[in-house]
Image (tube, rainbow, N blue to C red; front, side, top):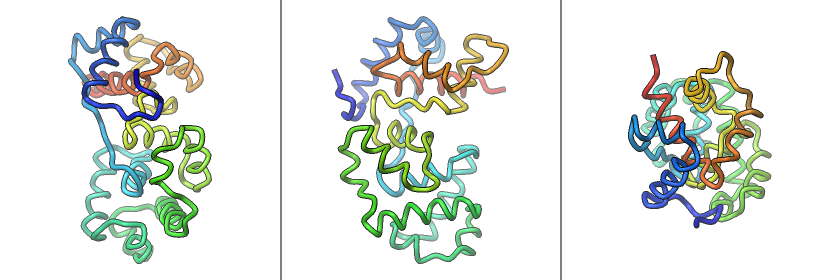
Length: 210
């Protein structure tokens, strides 16, 4: 059995799917109908968090487009090099004023030594949350996605993720969206593999978008 901080692998994802489909007929239906989900990943560290911040409240395509322009402008894309750019340069590649503030906060926290992402990679979830939440612009959703996609933690669960909420609503044919609290309660039966259950729900959502 995986520990909470051991990253998922292709093998453990397959094992998790077997366990989840035994205990949840809805997840079993998704797997039977659409196959295994992709293992969506993000880089660790500064780049991973930058990409997740860019993805806040925008489409994946839009976030990727901004990231690609940013990566072409800053070589290599490090916190130190990022801070060399002025607001005009960052706006030119598509960052909003708010996201310029958020990404600068992150870069400053790393370069000042306030935030040590290498150490946090090996820390338990409570400590990681405690440190990341101090950075303005990094909220619970960003931390959840970082745990899930960058660190590949097996039980990370983004209860506030719209894709998860919409997928479950459609799957159950619910007249209204479940709340964050309701989704979190529903997800208890998916422990200790809530991150894999999330991938299955994302897969279902993307396969059923109209």
